[in-house]
Length: 147
Image (cartoon, rainbow, N blue to C red):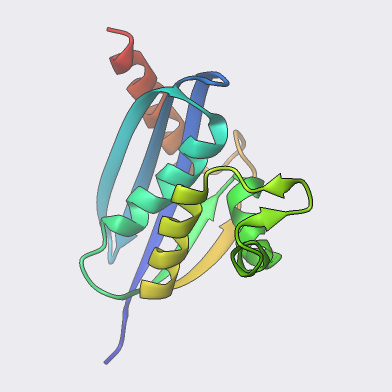
């Protein structure tokens, strides 16, 4: 059975670190588009970066071949450089001690095992229209929190 090919663009925003944060993901499949977005109070940049990817992958109803486009070196490099697998093997510890956001890393790892996922690093706040749209949506979520 051929897997559906989906592209997911993600971005995040945080006003203060910690502070109010927002995240967004836009999913593309055969010309169709779905957007998911949300926000949290008292959160961090890193939590929002991971949440955007988790929520994008969680929106998929079946196993897919997924390209995740993100400007988050934190999230993308963890997979491209194999850090996440070493962290898990070492009881979620890295060179600096216990890894932060273990709950989110575990969920993200679970989702990447459910789907066939490739991570692609994009330059943030540049000419990538989809990344810029996610940034706008994430900032809008912060504004919603403050109303």
